Length: 603
Image 1 (cartoon, rainbow, N blue to C red):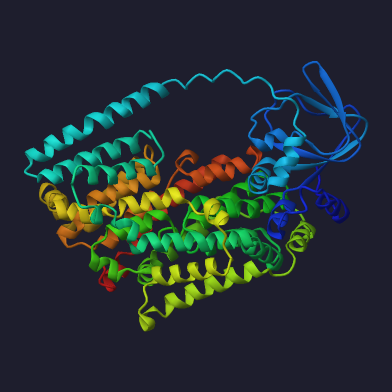
Image 2 (cartoon, helix red, strand yellow):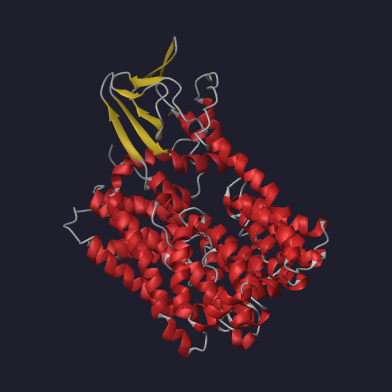
């Protein structure tokens, strides 16, 4: 397969189902489009083969066979069922004479088919007759037992937790709340349902069992953190939909000097620039992925440099996630669990200032790891024709792109000038979102498809835990029962942080990042408040270390990047060494920042 030239790309866009695509989606698709030439009788795919591409006929003809039926096709899509959710091919396809086809990768084509009914109809019209469904796959060994154990634990944990808390002298409401948290934690730990469902269950149980009034239980949905996350999600969606993120990545690539170091730096800087305005690592991964794919193609898919590019992409997505208050959803959870004094002291800009030194150390550690683990080699010559084609597909700056730029600029200026106008950043962000909605820059469909409502439900349900714990006296009960932990935290903070970092590395081998963060902070923040240790410091340490991981299964965004690019595109062993190095670097950055935090009276 090769990249299409200008004429071939122009012919591709003439297909009726593709003419309605907006410029930003054309640009992203143009970067991944390839042209495939087949010799007479050369096979394209075989029956029940795993699909990686769908194809659009350009010239020549194809023969298709399904069971005993055989037919010819000279136009339209081939293998379009793969873009509509089919996991396997429905028959065989081979060339009827010489044939030329456009090869479209499935991931972007599936997203386009979901958003554009015309393209979906075109894919459906070309489908062969459906095959009978496959028998259900047998459950993985131990899967059923694990789920059963999870539900038994979720049922048994609440009465046991209630009984133990009542024996410790907790109030009736406090003991019931601990029982609710025990059931919620069991559902998270055993991964029984999506993460937001146990959080919503906890909210409902608090109301039904009269643990706290509705105004307290549902206070998270009226909190600053909830509205800040909603606004930033929406502005990030506008940046993606408008094509601004694609335009920025192309501008970075075309303006950067030649050389591997500059390309790695562009990938890193792109992810870092998205961090404060796209509060989801997985969403940032989806935006960075086409950029990464372009660089992998330019490099000729060499595993050594592929691993370096993957490491740069991962660093851009995750390195500053805890540095910005809006870097990931868990930050807003922590912010909601802080007491009112800590929330006042660590708004968006103060949070960034406090975390800046640690963030700079992580950038330095990333640079050293790249120099040691991925020494530069001679890069193959790479022209910018593909980048030019993508830029031409985007066209001039659109109205939506100008709106996204204006929104980001206003949020930035409003944040920096907050001491003068005294408007909290969440409400400033919400005001900008309302203006975008009133002027039609964002539509209802955009909000439905691009805003992660499950994360918002998760955040809104959990933020109220802190006031519920205070109202029921659970925070004081935790502080009294674990007074020795609080005393150790205050008397020897470096030693406590060392044990905390080691414990988090082990916990993350079993628990997802967000679940580990919520469970640890629910326990540790009351202890920090009782011991007189900065809640922000403990929260930041937990957020930073929970972001660290070693293996791909621990990181949804690395799994996503790997799914979008072939296995041979990068060296897994080198990437594992990079992940291990950055896990150590995160712990060292926390310790090295203690003098800085002491000077700022944060400890």
